[in-house]
Image (cartoon, rainbow, N blue to C red):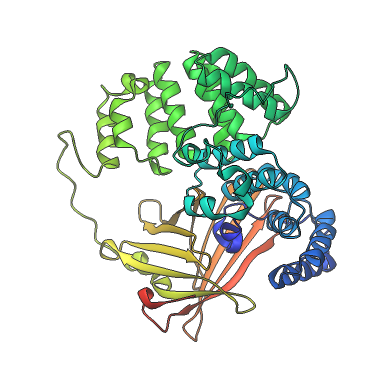
Length: 460
């Protein structure tokens, strides 16, 4: 069971949606009681309180995820599954939520569903294979011959035993299984048709959109492929891979500039397979452009670099580049109640031009960020990525001595504030809004306290 990626809500982009404007102090108090019961392991009380609070604030992603976890702990996996599916609709902790749906399926005896959701989790970036191999929630599917291949990256495959009978119509799972079977058999058009039916039933299913895009490329239906990868990317499913495939789709249509733009963006989002860049025939149309070689060179750290003009003189760093140095150090991270939830090391790198963050939660989950001042834009930028593939891009600047970075996608906004305190601590507050900034809710409010031991000696 994977709660760890939600243990530190501040590192999950869009993990919380702001409550409706009509939410009053009573609802906030209900969630406070729910979280207290949750932290104490009082699952029945936590479930009741979360359900009550979500009745008033149904878009609260943190509460939704915690409700699902509490339901599993209370022995109610059948009730937990739709809760985690709701997390996917809210784009909350997509990797952990997908993994937990696999757990729910396995706990309720749905072997095929458990394996299929596990495959989705791996395709979406889940890589805690030690957890999958030891998690009691997956015991029912661990003995299946397909379990280890799925962890190794193999797609879910319909068993050859004939025990699974697919209907011509039916549920999203039916159509996904049909699509997977047709895909594995090499029938791209039939697979695309099956995935299209799954998408029609569940429009926010990022896995189905991604798979439809993949087989649509094989079927040479590039318009459908492009639309599908745009959807999977917007839903937060396998974002670097979705973006890379948008580059492929445009390259195959001869859209060189658009293809290179998507390829550049894929690299920025974490795509790092230089060998695939060199060998993928889908990108053949881009290889003659000098920009392509530069992208490959950046991915593999400088190999095969084409001749380039001499680099311009280095710009001198200014005081603006050091405004965020108060965040540098080895820290223990505490929530508002004083509970330790992780440790963080922030190092000044590149001669003072950037800050490199390395985060480890109390449960062992990891993430990192690069934060820097861009003199050309006169703004600070931060790029965050965690082990599940969740990415966050925020920018901003210094406001009254605090570093304030944020972003906006549609009506959703995030605002993160780091403030140095007189006692040497740093306070971090993450706020989220679902209505364009009309109302805000705290996703995290906690403190960085400098370590008493070196990082390699710090224990939980």
